[in-house]
Length: 111
Length: 116
Image (cartoon, rainbow over the protein chains, first blue to last red):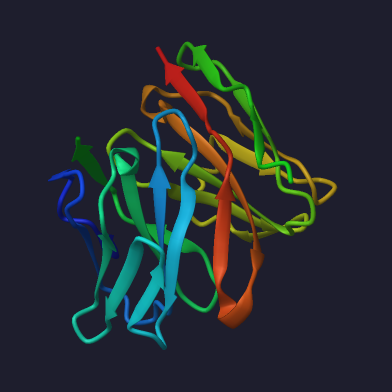
């Protein structure tokens, strides 16, 4: 049973437009959510996070939205840049425990 | 600040051989994780250490995988004997527990293992 799901394996957007990456979860005990970005041949790097007590967190061009009732979160990148092309992983944890990762979405930003 | 170091970066072995991976976490990070990432999937936790104690090894195939963190700093992960399905990237990560129970993990570059 996959507790964190990223249903879109890939996403392609034009430079300057908005990228929206989605993530769904099933475990209502999750209270902390993170997005990681991964380039080829590198390990994932932390991008942005959100606690379950919030519904939005913003950091520059990156905003994460959390809808607890729908068990859904999304990552918005505005404006998208070619350097944002990477695999994005959604992760969730409960009570500072282990993180459970989704299978990732490959974002391609076309110049 | 130095990041998480892993070696080797690549390893090719034949099935039934043994292999070992090494990880040195960020200085001061008490928590260390080993993940297995199969192509097209997200990282799957194999084992989590808090200092030199095991916190979670529920998904570690203990008949062939072992890991240790003897002095609470660096760690080794071993596979013996390897199977074809062990071909994956093995990621090491370390973390501190931050505010509100937040846990941000810092990953190493990974070791890409190919079992033939």
